[in-house]
Amino acid sequence: MRDELKKEFARRIAQANQISMITILYDMTLVYLEDAKEAMELQQKKEFVQEIHYAQDCLMELIGSLNMKYEPAPALYALYLYIHKELASAIISSAEESLSQPVSILKRLRDAYLELEKTGSFEPVMDNAQQIYAGLTYGKNSLVESVTQPAGNRGFLA
Image (cartoon, rainbow, N blue to C red; front, side):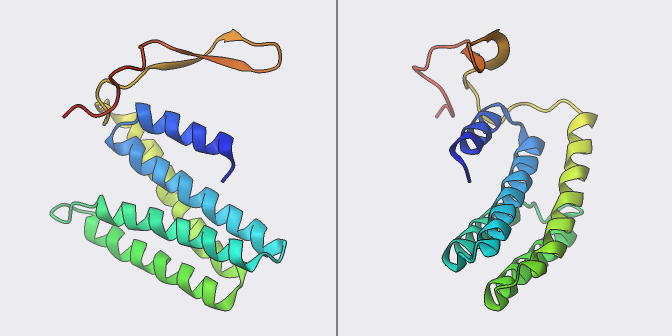
């Protein structure tokens, strides 16, 4: 994952609510799987395996976020385990074609969560996080971001 994507995900996480955190995890998983495809095209087996492991780590976070008392958590759990198994078989077979079905499933789930984000207003997960505004001013060759709070006491409050 490129550094600018890491920074973008860090910004999104700082402003995220419970639903958008799931969407971010889907996005991160899809980026890792895309990076795995690129690594395999370049015959970089080690990087291919590493990117799939990163995607599997994201899936484990998604599994950990499920509350099994409520629907559709059991169905999502089974789906996440299926995707995890498919990714493991992609490592064994070293075939990027076996990533197409997990990618398709994850994209549909991400789209569903994006729709869910639009339906309600949820509180951000992180209290006391910095507010970041992009586009208020422009640099010579890039967009400038403005931070509205000092960086002293940010993030989760104990």
